[in-house]
Image 1 (spheres, rainbow, N blue to C red):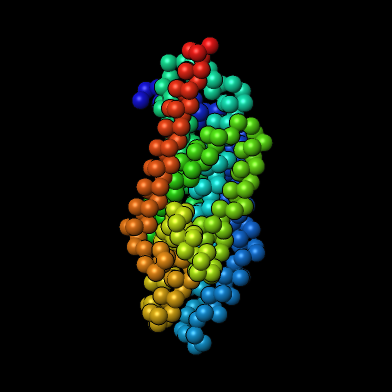
Image 2: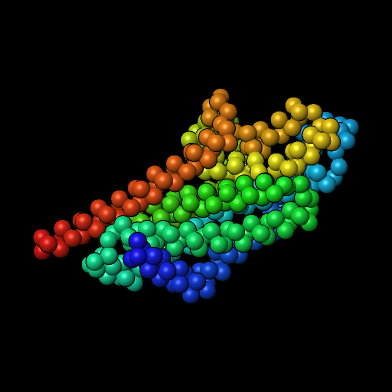
Length: 305
């Protein structure tokens, strides 16, 4: 554990020492917020109001809060994974510089080395995502605040869990990369495609039945649903207080993926947490095992020579 802690400290220092890497990871969620507010806020507003029966006693503030909750949940659900790929450049840089090979011939265990990269990436990503969450919550407060203290705490728990998952996913994928060009290409693909696959850019409920069933096998889908559920829950409660029929609220919750289904079965909040947590654990286990087998293979090749 001591060696792992030293590796984590070393990796975190190197990450924050590279100002370009750190600033790129930090400003990405802020840029997404500006783009979402500029181009998608009105689209979401029109969609929500179009699904409400005429004559409902619903204030503009509630609609603004609903739209803001949808926007920030999209940003946070995506950032927890995409930022992890930006923060994980160091593991590839060590391959390019040859530092990883120096570690492999040292007494450092492969499990300590892999966990050193993982936890350093986790802490860096979590710090950036918490900063992004603070920015998003400030925006939510200026537009329409209906969140309770419990909602905020659960939202932070969702971010923590998604960062665990995103870090495990990026660590596993980056294990197979060995150049800066490769990780840049993978980061671009993930940034462009993950938001659609997890339902952040477009609700999964709006897809065809076959695609919905296919995406229900992806753990990121349930992570996005958790963030949606807690970012928009306060606005839905206020809608209920304002007299909006329960069936209308239920339809909106389904449309925004606050309620999500595995084929025809509704997935509960506890099941969503379990799916994301177990998926992250499985990815991390595979990542550590790959490091272990790779290290043994290198040792075996050196002995044969």
